[in-house]
Amino acid sequence: MLGRFDPSPDWNVRAEFFAKAIAAEPNDPDVLMLHAAFWLAETGATTDAKRETARAYEIDPNSDLIVSHYLDLLSATNDVEAIESVVTAAGPDSPLYSAYWQLVMTSRMQAGDFAGARKALANVSTAFDRMKAKYPHAKLDQARDMLTRMLDSVEKKDQAALAKLANDIQADTKYGQAAAMTVLGNLEMLGLHDKARAVAEELYLNNGYRPLPGTDIEFVPQVYANGRAPLSILMAHYMAAFRTDPVAWRIFAAKGLVKYWQDSGRWPDFCGEIGLDVCKAEAEKATAAQRTN
Image 1 (cartoon, rainbow, N blue to C red):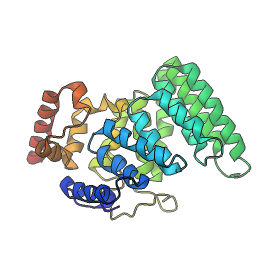
Image 2: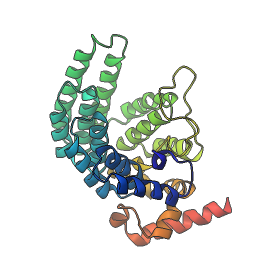
Image 3: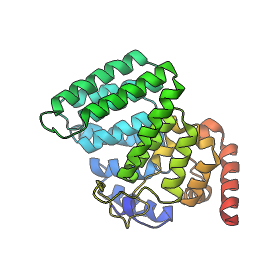
Image 4: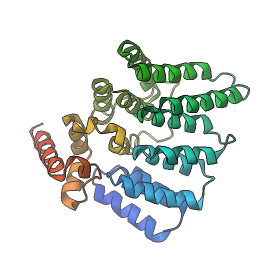
């Protein structure tokens, strides 16, 4: 937990906490999950993070928290078939069942499998119907409509519909930084890069999107500035276009990741895709810009 929430900008400090935890409990599923999600994934070792979370899942497949993090990493590495397999195994009694099928829908949608996405959306709808009696005040019809509009607009490449959808999606930033991360991912998945960039700048560079009074549904105390908005989402495959933007590297530099990568030589997985020389050059530019500012 100290590795997850320590406010130090020095990533080596966080590394020591995680190393001690793994040394003490190398087979504890919660330790494995935290290490994978908040160290490996955050520093860009996404493949290793997925592998380690898979171990945690094998040990405790009934933990909703572990399943949720495992699905996030499967999504980050574009492992669509595995996502649906894990969701199916979770079963309809899982409290996060509808959210899991939403992930299947967006993953299928990104892959261009619109028939598969519509099947997943039907499962989301069924889950919502089951939830109505238990959560009569939840805005489930509104959520269903949003997902339907998302799928329709992407499949039809309807730019006007996408623009309107983007405005509705961005409204969720009022619920705080965790919600803003979801908004960022959704905007980038929809190909709305300019809007995604603006959210990322506000979230990571300005420490913005504090919840409005009466809407604070987050569980992380305000004092943990580095723990509220993890950087792991920026390492996901669907954020590849965003990582070519100088803003992404400004964020990596501002949060201390560039220095960690340069000092340790442990560059993120995505550098294997765009080229290590490109990553090193972008890191140098971001560091120089940081000094200037």
